[in-house]
Image (tube, rainbow over all chains, first blue to last red; front, side):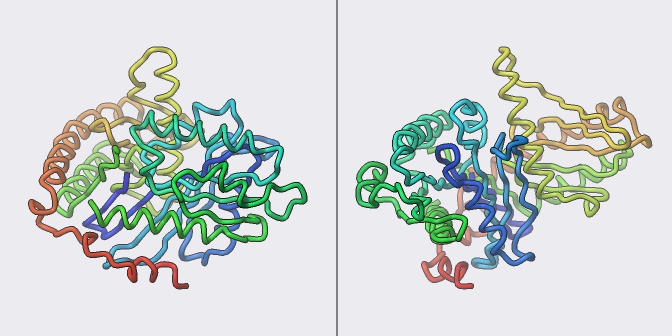
Length: 194
Length: 164
């Protein structure tokens, strides 16, 4: 749910990074945080376990500049990817404007990717959203690892509505901003329709 | 899709800020924040610069969402009030107009009883303001004083956001 403050001339949108555990959602946010100028970002918050796994969410507020005189803010969230945190994942999708799905390119994680997309679809539905209609981008992360599945095979398996898809190596920043831009653009185009 | 926007206009924002200022004064609180349930700050009053309000808004919304989840698990509709007691500062969290969160930060100069009492009164007033805001929003672009600035967004406008 985009929050438009006409008095303060601000648009606030919420983007959620979804995907299986250890797929690189938090690393995407960390890279964005590192590469964004201090005046354009707020504090990054990570609610993590002692072992540094996401427990509830990571949060990063970004200010992308102005559009038609309105300051455009994006609030980026990640969900905990581990299967048993489903209740938390559902909560974080509340009021979402766009979703980035971070898929793990390693062959042995394909089943987890597919299961996570199904889970995303079901959880969005509970909030009244339709994955086929919501702004959405797909990232094939971890392309630098040796045991990855070929991109075209992954595309056939995971891409279902020709959503913008990017290859990523999140710790090096490859594909990170391209993925963010793709989903942010779709959100702003949606605004035009409303 | 349920992507109804929340829209805040100058007039209602002024009324909300006045209500928050009154609440802060009457409850002797350090600061009060009004946050939408998705974690965006709507308005604030008091010593707000002492706090990282963006983080505060996001964590408060997460806190309320998690507590709502707990309530449903045990068959309650919601827990309408949350209270966090610290050594020095305390936080009182309540739901306003079913869609916003009122956060009051206070210390020993106030008390939980006083905050609860004043929050109750302020909430009733804010309910009315939110009703007015919803009505205005439902009028659509034609009924608004301010025309929607987004209908005219061009691809160039969007690209310019990512140019640097």
